[in-house]
Length: 345
Image (tube, rainbow, N blue to C red):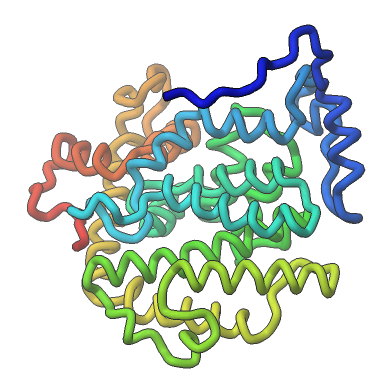
């Protein structure tokens, strides 16, 4: 049975982007990033008729291949048997949800927040952070997924400067983002991965919820739902009370302790370190293979083996691979035994 509703108005004047901008910008908190026309982009564009510049960025990221490929890139567990464990795609979606939940009530630009959060990990290679160490020797200054994502992977989308800055600087070992929305995304990334990685590890049997230190559980609880709620509320209230993006001390200490627990019991456990080492060897081998044989790359014809252009093309191609594609390439091109491929339970 269909729900009955009143007919939609016919001939009603459409709400243009400029009108929406004026309305939305008037409701933003002081210091929030305002939407303006086509936005500040490397290549100037005409403004959209209905969408703000940051809504346009979000749409471009959603429709991009790098974003879609995140579905095949692991978050923590490489090629797991359990389909419910997070991928980079589900991680990005959850970071966006957390970031928007913080940005909306404090009056920040929700579209900018969502765009940056959605695209923040598009620079990640296969097998998670293992790819960064493997690809760093081939990139001047080292391979950093945040920088590579903003400056290389998403460069063709011609995103706004503010969106790219938030993506480039979402990691805590990078400079502070230039906008409060970017700062929120950096916090949301940490909140999301700390909580959902713990949940995944419990589901995978790596740890038990009861093993979480009591001083953490007493502040934010032992399950992901309670933890996310506690951290989001702590940030919203802190921003409202101080005017600065941050988290009050009890929850911030709990977040740090939960992250430390994850590193000790999940990320750096011997089995995970062994699989990361295998993954790094695989990725490094693929990069070396293609930079020496650039003719095997899409659009690699004419590149000189070992040249800077060939190296850049090889890194770009390998970093874009999904875990499954990289493993198959290792078997077919490098002669890897399938039993030796990186995989975590």
